[in-house]
Image (cartoon, rainbow, N blue to C red):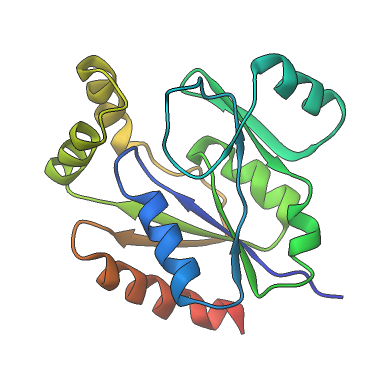
Length: 182
């Protein structure tokens, strides 16, 4: 049985990864979004995720509950092994990944399509300020990391500017990945 590709959505904080992922799932039957497990403290919201305490996360790592896990921004992130079951029943699986873990994800998943979202610096700054999750100093650190390049060696990468209307971004993504999904 063939497995569906994994579509990794990556980009700097404030680029709109969650909005893009929600819109892709809403517009494209057959694409399933996998929720990450994150050690984000209570009171800090964001994407649709499964919150766990640090100790619980470490137990999950020891129990081999994740197909992929990593640390970023002082938090731990994990992609549950259930993603492999989903890959047998859908057209594509969508997951929010860190740019730093992409090469490992390509090794783990094999068929990985990377959607690298970008946006104008002013748009990123506006979005970070409006979500109110980070202090001004943390917003500055995140903006400074916005220009981080993707690792060398990725096979399928599509860069998409998400500075404009969301529908335009989704149209661009679907135009680029449709040939990859047939």
